[in-house]
Image 1: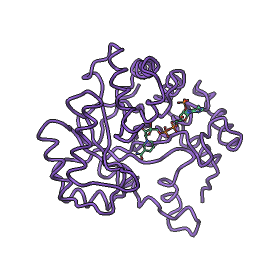
Image 2: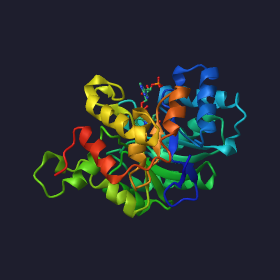
Image 3: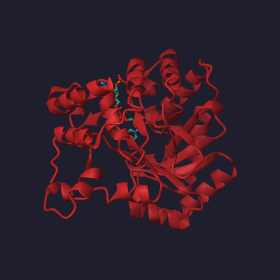
Image 4: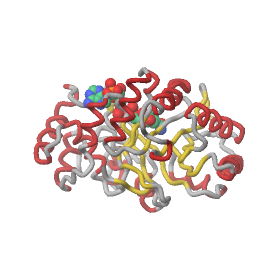
Length: 303
Ligand SMILES: NC(=O)c1ccc[n+]([C@@H]2O[C@H](COP(=O)([O-])OP(=O)(O)OC[C@H]3O[C@@H](n4cnc5c(N)ncnc54)[C@H](OP(=O)(O)O)[C@@H]3O)[C@@H](O)[C@H]2O)c1
C-alpha cells in the first residue's frame, strides 16, 4: 500500500483509508476482522465522526481494536465535529465537547486529525481558533482539517487559526466528478462548466491540502459497481482492469488514486473481502488515455 503525506504534515498515511461510518452495524468480532483486514492490507488510517451510529461506531471501533494485536500508536485516528440534529455548530463549546466525547468513545488520549464536518453558516472563526488552540495545547488533537469546505471558507478559517489545515474530505468518485468537470469545461457554455466546488481541486493542490474522497463507489442511484443502471462505466472499468489484473471494483478506486493531486480515498465497506480487493487499487498507474475513457464511460463529455 502506497503511503502519502497528509497535507504538509509529517503524517505518513496509506492512500486508502477505512471509513467507519457503518461500523455500528457489526458485532465486535466482525468489526475486529474488518479493522485487522484493513491493517494487514497496509491501511493505517481510520475515519470517524461523532455522529456515526450516534457514537456507536466509535465505541465499536475501540472495543474491537482491543480484540486485535494492533496498538493505538500503529494507526492514525481521525474524527469530525460540527454536525448536530438539523443544524451545524462550530461553537467553541461544541467543538471541544465533541472531541472529549470522541476521545472517550474511541478510548484514546488523542486524535491524530480533527475535521470540521460541514460548513456552519454561523461560524465565528475566532471561536474555532480558540477551540483548536485549547485542544492542540492539551495534546488532545494533533492536526486539523475540514470536510465539505470551499476554498474561501477555508481561507476565512485560516485567517484566524494558528494550526495548518491539512485535509478536506469531499465527495468524489468516477460517478461524482464535479471537481474535475468544471476545470475541463472552463470557459465553455456546457452545463459541466458550472463550478459547484469553487475550484476546490486546484486550491487544494496549490495549498498542499489532501483531498479525502468519500462515497467512492456511490452514484445517485446507490452503489454503481455491477449496477445495470451504470453498465457502460462498469464495462470500461472491467476492460481496462484486465490490463492491470484487477476487477472493475478495484479499478473504480484506482481511477481516483490516478489523479496527481494524491488523494486519500475513504472506503466505506465493512466487508473484509472487499477491503482486500480495493487495496489492489494502490499501485495501479493507468494511462492518461485510459483515465479519460473511464471518465467518458461514466457519462461525461470532453469538449
Ligand atoms: N465527510 C462527509 O461528509 C462524509 C459523508 C459520507 C461518508 N463519509 C466517510 O466516508 C466513508 C465512505 O463513505 P461511504 O460509506 O458512503 O462509501 P462507499 O465506499 O461508496 O460505500 C460503502 C457502502 O457501499 C457498499 N459497497 C461497497 N462496495 C461495494 C460493492 N463492490 N458492491 C456492493 N456494495 C458495495 C458497502 O457495503 P458493505 O459494507 O456491505 O460492503 C457500504 O454499504 C464513510 O465510512 C465515512 O467515514 C464522510
